[in-house]
Image (cartoon, rainbow, N blue to C red):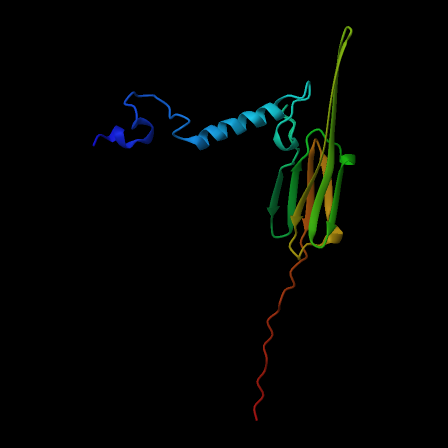
Length: 172
């Protein structure tokens, strides 16, 4: 038996490069039809293009800031990239050993050229939560915001030093 006869899409025809027919793989045909249907439905709403599940296809997907979490002996440092935001747009809370960073990003862009005016606006809210170890001193948490970078310092509660104590054994 020739190897090419064992390959399903070449078993009916010996021509190289022939694709399987829709009769051979009906699920592939169904998948193509479903993809076309979703593309047609979500593809164009006039000047407001959408993609599935409500995300904008124009490159303005949901904003989720990146977090860096670093731990040392004395503190935990959380750094969040919040480009294009101000500190007034960000809220930080601590509740039940969970630090939550919430915010809302708003951008507006306007171009005027003669009689034409183009205005673009985008809005998006985000929320990120980080579980904190129990040894963080919640009363001494410090946050700073500089050039679109939020830095939260979470000092650890100093570990109690356990002193060794020699216990005398009493004789009878």
